[in-house]
Length: 332
Image (cartoon, rainbow, N blue to C red; front, top):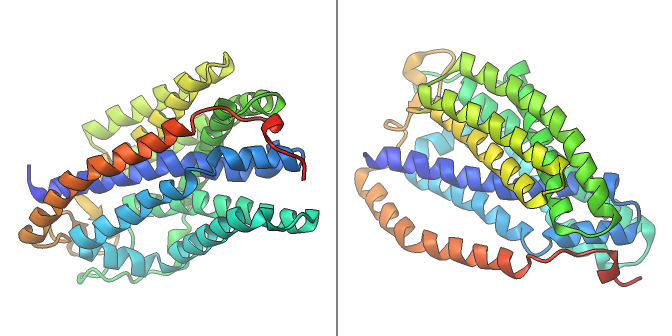
């Protein structure tokens, strides 16, 4: 297997890990005003992701770094053409991170409510815009023959991309509700479990529509199989949520997200950013890649350090695996 193909797969794996892990804490953030009836319940929800949310974002940083080093042409064209959406994602993530740190600094309800809003919008905006971005990557964007983006913002807000944004938001909401049910005790657990089933039904409809539309735009045998697997995993997760098997439900939604992302990358390959104007402008895994020597050095670095990072993050989740409830949260 060529190094360009290996690094395309590694970038796909990194974004898959990011959407699985950041997906549930985006979902928790979006559900904060819905499931959190009072300050203690909202603190319970925040504490479910408190030890892990910043580690989850490392997957995005690593994915961006891998794109920059392995496919610099892809990175440059993507970040220039998608400048405004990616800037909004960055600002939302910054506001969300600050909110987690500053919410508890003062006891006034108004102070906490403002930071709760920052958490909500800081989760909602990336959840929608990542779907919009990846839908446009697969659909293709206006690129000139020298790989320059020549479109505008409205080119990115097409019906297919907007459906992609709605799909990722719905999937993350479902994933987050299942995670809250998995990590909490008492009433909030019951409400989260019931909500997960209702949200999952909406997510299933949107996901099936989006993946079906995707396969009409760009497809392969692997993409069809992966899309079918994603649908089956989501339905299995919802069935498990309905009978209150939260562990299996979370596994189901995680696998569904993983296979959905894999479907997009499988349908995209060997392209990395198709052109809707001139086929000569399409970026592929070959013409967007770094030199073979750079890819070789990067491969050795990845082989050495990736298992260490995975082991550390797995240990973090193991340490903070227990459920929490309002009884664990002192009154302020």
